[in-house]
Image (cartoon, rainbow, N blue to C red; front, side, top):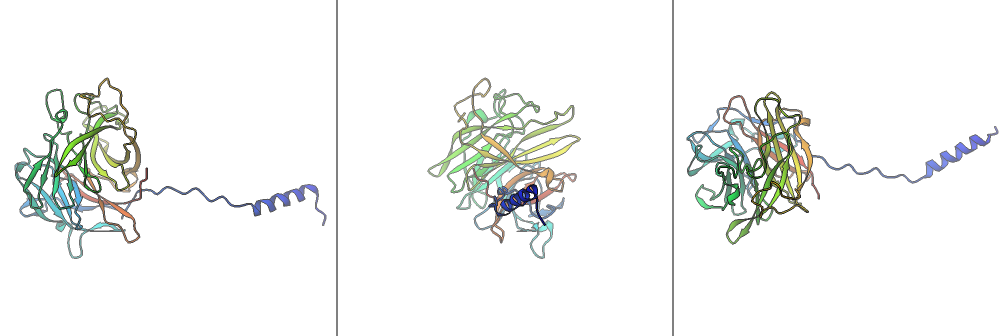
Amino acid sequence: MRRGPLAILLLLLASCAHHAPRVPPSPVPPEISLLGDRPLVIPFGCRVDGLRVGGLSGIARAADGSWLAVVDNDGDTPARVFRLAFALGPQGIVPLPGKSACDVATGAIRLPGLDGKNFDGEGIAIEAAGGMLVSSETEPSIREYSQSGELQATLPVPPRFLAAKGQGIRNNQGFESLTLEPGGNALWTANERALQQDAPDDESRPSPVRLLRYERRGKGFVPAAQYVYEVDPIVPPPEKGFAVRGVAELLALPEGGLLALERQYVEGRGMTIQLFRIEIGGATDVSGLESLAGQTWTPVRKTLVYDFARSGFTPDNLEGMALGPRLADGSRTLVMISDDNFSPLEQTQLVALRLPLLSN
């Protein structure tokens, strides 16, 4: 059968297409994903060492693999850090074999001289030697304790953070976060929302928070650089009712940079929990500025890397996060914990995520 010119042309094009080199698809960047399909919930009313388990606002993992969680405040009961034990794997977080969810808290470390009226524990970090660094947003303050709860030191806080009339932190918006860089030579914290002198407390506009870096000098830490992190506004702005959005936790990443947990609550809408990758390079050190108002500065860069809206469950008041052990396939894990405010209407949730390498 004879082929016309058009048929011959089509055959040649098909032949060329068949033998043309294939272009490999672009690699898909790794994504943070939930391990399991739901959090482990510690039931309301559990007790250990005679103390209520709840109000867990910060979590950290020690070098020996154990976990510690700091309690924010509980009336006039002792300020404390709970020891936790649980299993973590591809199925998420579960109680240890033969144990129940009420057995996750295994003991309490009391912090002498402090209770829920003068201490509001929010962040915790563990040094390589086992000492605990704990932040309170009441003053705000950062204290260093031994493994048994003995006070070792109180870190200096720059005066512009201290609560006062027209200056410093606003009520309940202090040092909500605390994290040590790998190697332990730098410590990070932040005010939850803008200091009084830096910006009005307007939920409809970005709130400039100061990331405060401490550097190790000798046996202790001293304040060093400060960088501006802009908390997202609430969109759409609430017309009425209670609403707040702020930095609830920071986590120093082994590959450099930080992970920030932004937590939002709007009455009638519920909770929004998002994770952002922070890159410091190029940001202005604002430690020399008494106020950010009317000044020129460059904030840190932030990138949304996970939104709990896609988790498949309703997150509660997630406030703490820490790097967990690696899975059998080498994947990193991220453990998060929620503060139930000692309310039967809220939950103490333990959540695990698979955390890829978040390169610069």
